[in-house]
Length: 155
Image (cartoon, rainbow, N blue to C red; front, side, top):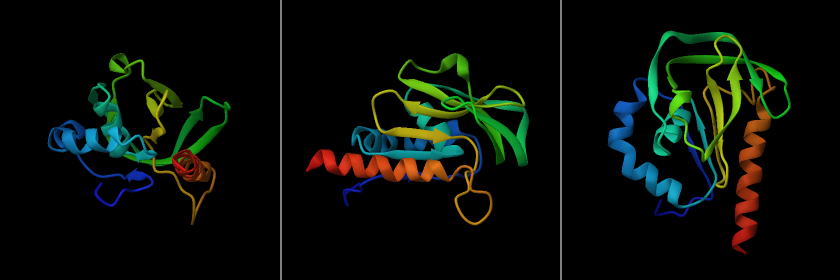
């Protein structure tokens, strides 16, 4: 945070996000209070949800594999995603400040979120941009665009 980043990427990782969240709560709040672009994937997605008041729950059957269909709610397109997680955001605890952007076509679990007024978004799956499938590369472009907009607003 001391280097004044233009954006922050919260990457994937193992384990129970609520255990991680307890140790990272102050850091996450500091990051989110910067009001700079934040892009979270996998546990980063879950930590963003936790930071805004959602809860996570252990899934009865985790999502594991490279063929999980996810629906993008903004354009109704289906993306085939790679996933490896055993926890999910409990949609019953989602705050009004977060909007669901993607859902799993296997079990309707939340696969993507965006903040309604801050440049913060996340996906539960592992988006590819290169090498491999590129159908989720737009997420990285969206993150870069948010950084450009944020930087232009400061000048």
